[in-house]
Length: 132
Image (cartoon, rainbow, N blue to C red; front, side):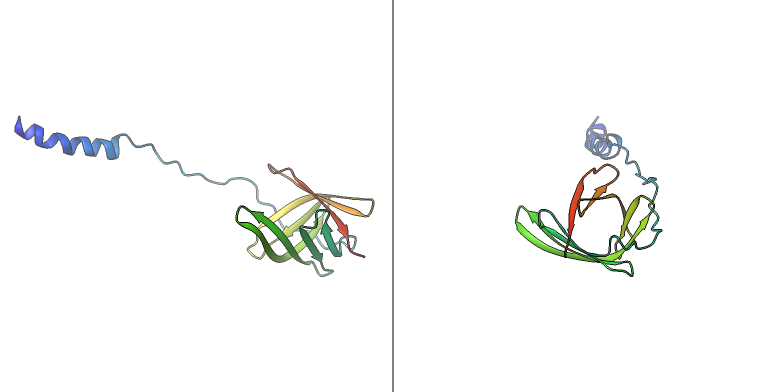
């Protein structure tokens, strides 16, 4: 009986560590990757500022872009800057950052403004006004 009582705490610890744990499932991202294909379109070339004034995109003829933005966080406003490549492929405006991440946008021109819409699960849009 004493041997059983000595082994009982060890058995309980082992059961707690290994017997009651949930299985870890590996998550594989199998969503299709957006391919960066297309070319610069002269309608987009220039400097564009968001209507709220928080971001400015400079789109160059050679397909390079620069984005300056003000991001608001609980700790206060923060200025950010990024650059990369841009292109148009059919009805999509594509942005590619230096890490190779490609973000597709829908686009529409109306009344001298460019509206970029995020596709996928984050359906938001940004209205840009071209600098004179």
